[in-house]
Image (cartoon, rainbow, N blue to C red; front, top):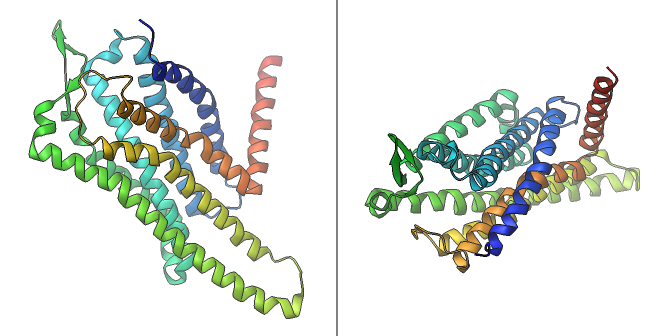
Length: 322
C-alpha cells in the first residue's frame, strides 16, 4: 500500500528541521548567554528561555516522537507510559513556547510604556521568577493529558500502544478541560500579544515624533542613536509576534474547527487530519525562524553569533590536529 502523501512529507520535513534547528538553537543559547549582544538582561533571559524550549521540542517531539517512534514501531518508545510522557512533554513545550512569547512581549511593553514599573519589573530577578512560575503552571496545567490516553494491549505485564480514553474525553471534566485549554492556549495569548504590541508601537511612534520635532531645529539631519534603537525594538517585537501568530494560526484554526473529535485510527486523506498535521509542522518551524529574526534585527547578535561559530570551528580544528 502506498504511503500517504502527508506522511511522506513528514518523513522529510522533521529530519531536515532537526538538522537545522538543533545547532541553530544551541548557537542561540550560547550567543545570548555570553552577554555581549547589548540587550537588556531581562530580554536576554526571555530569549534564552524560548531557545531552550525550542531545543527541548526538537529532542522530545521531533526526534523521539516523529522520527524514532514512527520508524521503530516496536521499540520501548511504544510503551504506553513512554508515549504518555512524550505527549505530556510535547504539550507542555507548546504551552511554554506560547507563554514565553507572551512574557517577552509583556517585558517589552513594560520597558517602553511603563517607566515607573520598568525599574522593578525589567530585572534579572523578576525575569527568572516569571519563567519559573510560568514553567510550574504549565507543568501542572498539562497533567490531565496523562489520563487522556490508555493502553491498547498488555504483553508480559507491560502496557503497549495507546488510544484515546473515550470515557475521559466524554466526561464533563475532560470536555471542559480541553475546551478551556483551547481558549487559554490560543485566543488569550493572541489577544494579549496584539494588545501589547499595539500599545507599544503607539508609544514608540508618539515618542519618536516628539523627539524628531525637538531635535530637528537644533541638530538638522544628524543621526539619532535613540531613534535607531527604538526602530530596532519595533522590528524585533513585531517580527517575533508575527512569527508566533502566523505559524500558530493554522494549528489553532484546525483545533477549533475539529475540536474534541476522537480519532482512533487517523484518516490520512481527511482534510481535518491534514490541516492538524500541517498546523503542527508550521508550529515547529518557529524554532528555526526565531534565530533568523534575532540575526536580522540585531547587529550585535549577528557579530556575536559569528564569533561563536568561529570559536567552535577553531576548537574543532585544534582537536583534528591533535
